Length: 390
Ligand SMILES: Nc1ncnc2c1ncn2[C@@H]1O[C@H](COP(=O)(O)OP(=O)(O)O)[C@@H](O)[C@H]1O
Ligand SMILES: [Mg+2]
Image (cartoon, rainbow, N blue to C red; front, side):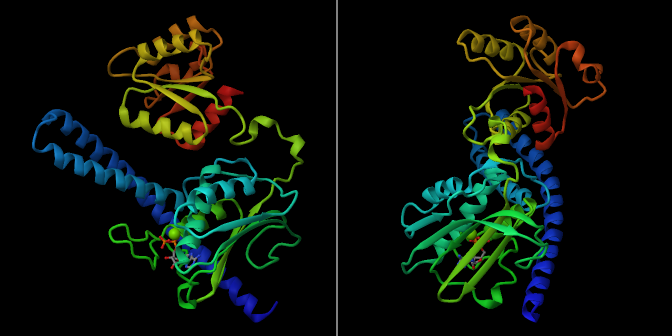
């Protein structure tokens, strides 16, 4: 190994460790901050209800709520960047994903682009949303770097790493798909190279919408979580090439059940009943993130009605999530009795924050096929849904 290679490897190692440490911190802050934000938003909503629509204070509350929503957005960025936000993987053809993202990102007033994908490109197992975020960030950067014309070349190829540490870096041996995005933009000065992956590092100025500096930070963290690698090569004044390596699916295509494919499988429909607004919105967001079509109900009666209607129109729900305790209306246990009467084979999960309730331990006796103890995370929800739909 040449001295230069060794230095690069060390740089990458320390950079990686530094980002990991910042990630842990960001994740911790995001978690605590999110909880505080829930309380602030909840109270703003309560105040809005109490003062009435025409009150003078209303516009201040609306502004405060808007700021909370922006803070929520920012927290989400932190979560994706931090050690949380683990990938929910499914099989993906990267050339399709990247070109659809490029179509979106590089449409109006952006430079022209072309994509060359090697024939027989392997598929990867990856989180579709996170991958979209990564490539949107990289393509935006490429587009934004080219104020004086030129074009963007995207390539995708299969790569085999035959020994650990080959090609530099910490990759395991195995099969990878490599996607490179080459622009003819301003390039990155040498002195900025050590900082470009840091959150909030940005050389862009967009008024109050100043570059947030999260594009590469998120890309780095997501690719790492997928056991891949991201590298940036740049010549100031000439252009930049960002390459991403993601482990390829090892099994032969035929050995995968078709239901595991992203985007192509029909979306399953879920009915979720939760009486509190914020958790309800959260459950909806999480389920949609997992690729489900979601309808929500505020309490048991509404859930039963929606369930009956769906049977009438021949598009029943594939699964139901029922909150056990509701403040007003019918609770989850009674709703389950009625839904079971409509469809004895219903696949339903009971959810509650009060884990001491006996039904949470003996959910099977009431006809539920799974249980979710609040607060639960995306992974727990995914496991429960997989179990309910298996
Ligand atoms: N393709 C590129 N060409 C030139 N500079 C780039 C490129 N990609 C990233 N950079 C540099 O890295 C910085 C961080 O990028 P990013 O994390 O996406 O944040 P942002 O785009 O919000 O500034 C950019 O501000 C820019 O200086
Ligand atoms: Mg960016």
